[in-house]
Image 1 (tube, rainbow, N blue to C red):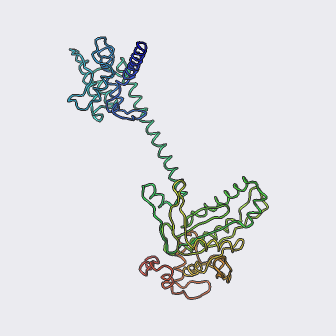
Image 2 (cartoon, one colour):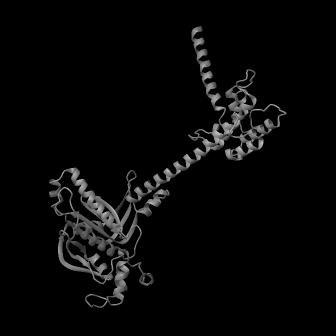
Image 3 (cartoon, helix red, strand yellow):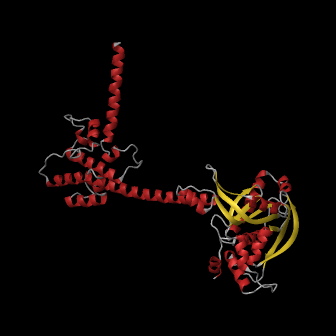
Length: 441
């Protein structure tokens, strides 16, 4: 029993000795850092100034911090720390300087007291400390205190450069993250998510949706390895992604060889959505004419395009990999327009055709009634191109050009302009006459 008690006593003494040795290193730490549960990994400049003041005290009095190395020391390192971190003392606990008739030593002690001020904001910078030392007659180029000051100043300057460099890296990484998020979600939706706001589902009265897929994709896949299929799709969709940037459209998703785009949401663009999708579709057909399959150079890639206009509901689905998804019969109908189309042609519904007819500037051809799954016989149209009198330098202004051409009676077929206002109100009741007049000015 006596042996057990002796072992426990020895263990307690070793534990206390270990804690005391650790605290002897912590006596240089500033009180505000001692009070923190988690201190900054690189410390602070104010904390460095406090530590420097403790070292200056050691140099003057010729023994350890707070006199701990003195054989007559009354306090342990643990007790010193407990007294330093107390906030209810009238005068913060600090080492004491012995009385000296040496004016230089007295002034040096005054500088040290200023450097270990309880309020970190009241402590001087190393640049101002150097000026104080020079006024006392201590040059940074000579003497232990001067050399120490010079090294600390260099360290502080280097720390500022490191912080500035890390901050620049952080900004760069944040921009990359923002760019990645905005490539997955519409910018307005991404901004809401970053601000912590909820993104509820939103209804849109009329948008235009594009679908396309690769004709004969199964046959091409049978002649290709999975790696080659991925490379081909990546090259094709990179081409499409570049084209989309010219238009007021948003790429919703790609599923296998299917490519889906929408215009008119999340930021509504009045009745321009059909024209933007139509122009983009024509651009895709033009771009794909020069597209080469890297591993099948003699194979001509052909796509089939469908578009439809109507109401949808859009919103964020999922939290791990959130996606901006569209729901409604308009999505299904647009998909049917694509699947019942023909290679290298753009098939559109009568709804999209009528909206394009409002704007003018497009060349279309009636295909007739087409049997579609779940829809029965539906009248569809081919989109053939645009009128010669329309300038496509800036596709986003195409709607304005076409409408102005109609209002001035400029048509390739010489026909009279239809009743623009009445037709617009049928497809978009909220798009009132006042808004249209402003839009056309």
